[in-house]
Amino acid sequence: MESRQARHRKPKKEVSLRSKTSLKVIGGLTLAAVVCFAIGIGASYWTSNKDPKGTPPTTVSSAALPTAAISPKPSAQTNQPSMQPSPAATAPMIVKSPSPAVTDKPPGNGSQVRLSFVGDVMLASKVEDILKAKGYDYPYTNVKDFLTKPDYTIANLETPITTRGTVQSKDYVYRSSPLVLPALKASGIDLVNLANNHVMDYGTEGLLDTMDALDQADVKRVGVGKNVEEAYQPVIVEKQGMKIAFFGFSRVVPEASWKASSSHPGVAETYNYIPPVEAIQKAREKADLVVVIAHWGVERSDLPDKNQKDLAHRYIDAGADLVIGSHPHVLQGFEQYKGKWIAYSLGNFIFTTNDIPKTWETVIVEAACSKDKQCDMHLVPILTKSALPTPMNAEDGKKLFERLSQISIGARIDAQGNVSKK
Image (cartoon, rainbow, N blue to C red):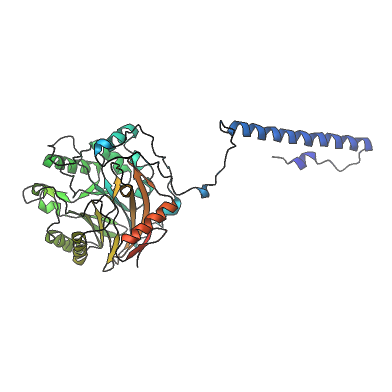
């Protein structure tokens, strides 16, 4: 656009004194008109953009925004499904794009594979009510980038996927519709552990339906099988030129009939450490990396019990390179044993919400592992309420990392979420 100076630039020729005087007057009037016009535009903008109370609009630089908004605290609840808040309640703020500072990590280059792990995922009961009201993709709104960017993403699925089966006699029984699976797959979750204390809530029929539904949705599964051999069989995938073997084992089995046998479908249990150890040793011979997802421990305990520590060490002695735990519904600490990392519990990722703040805290574990079987660990702090896990802001994340450092065994987590040996 032509500048004001250019518009008022005059040819280099002589003019009369009277002409010069006229030009000065005209120029002054033109400048005054421009100033008045600008003031009018500013007043109009102020009026149209202020709120009803007359407060002027505020411009906030994107650099000043926190990593993610923290959802408002819900009313007090219990962990029983009947006390879950109604989906009609005020929804937490949805953050469309997580902080690039956390998600933008260097892509794999063939020398490292990037794995991400999340805690317990339960898509039934009142959580399913929320999904029906808000959409089956709703829980992943604020975390999808963290789940899709890695080479492989793993979760512990606490829900049988079935519309059939015989309800079991136990305190908490869950069941999810197969309608939840397309969104779970689209979220970036590639593999789920089924070795847990809910996968057979609707009996053998519910378990077999779950296996079939996951297979049809192209979501890999570990920790269960139509017989004991299949239950202890690893899933082996190749990413970044590395073969990775995944196992799922549970030390929380409601009754003996849930355990897989030579003639009966069921769970890969780890009360007896020998079958898991033998399976890991065999996988070690053909895989570059061996990962164990274990379901174990005491609910709502900050610290791993003796059985967790003993089993984790046995897995690593047998050849496991990384051990990730679940079941306590709260975060537990980290430990490095013989150069290998153990995450004893990741807590809840998508679950019913209760009135215990520790159950609202979780992390996404980002592991960058190399062919020399070493993994660098990075954590993304997450607040999870009402089926909407959301990245914490920097201040809350730092507080969570400080707490995790206090309950870890010979390990610390810095303010950026990097896990290291003390």
